[in-house]
Length: 313
Image 1 (cartoon, rainbow, N blue to C red):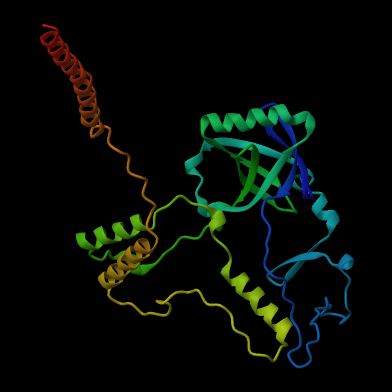
Image 2 (spheres, one colour):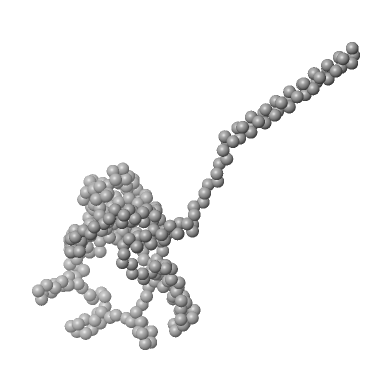
């Protein structure tokens, strides 16, 4: 991975120099726009609407317009801003981890400490773990001041940018103004369906089916040609496209489907353990036989001795 930013985490008088890396990446197939008639690649030019000339990227500045007035901002103007020059990730406060709403979280970054900063880095990580807190930080990245949540993932500190409060929209839906009546049976069946689908989350168990099918489609076109008919596997299921209106019917069908799937893949039963209680009588019986066998010869010997006495007499 390549670091995209360098700075330092500061909390109190402690400073932790770190490198910032993107924590995620996209694996979507890169698709280009082409001319439908001849397949020629479509290219975009940065053309000035005033003079009509194509402008190189180095000669482009940014501007803000309001009320018919325009203010042009150059790279030098942005460098004058204190936040742009500051490479400090300032800890503003430590808050309970469950108070950071998922809706506000945005891009994630890994933080790598420099060798000399390993001890304070580890100390901060363990402090967050011990207190179950998330650090709310403020920093500047790519010419924009950002609010972020600093949290722990394994043995790494993760910086996840957050939306500002005025960037989170309020869902003003009139339809939610009234609450429909839900019967106990409907709630019970919905709970059963939730329970039947409950499991521990394993992200590796999920794949991007669209990208897989897109790759399959491209592979067949490369093999058979653009005009050849191709067939892409569809694993969407039997109920795809059904327009189910009745809620109870939908719940019953869903539960029935889950039940059928469970029967097809029954769990392996553990081998039954043999009961030791049944063996006990067998041992006693065997012992009794042995005792009887030992006593029998003794009686037989006594009878022989009596016969011998009579004969000698």
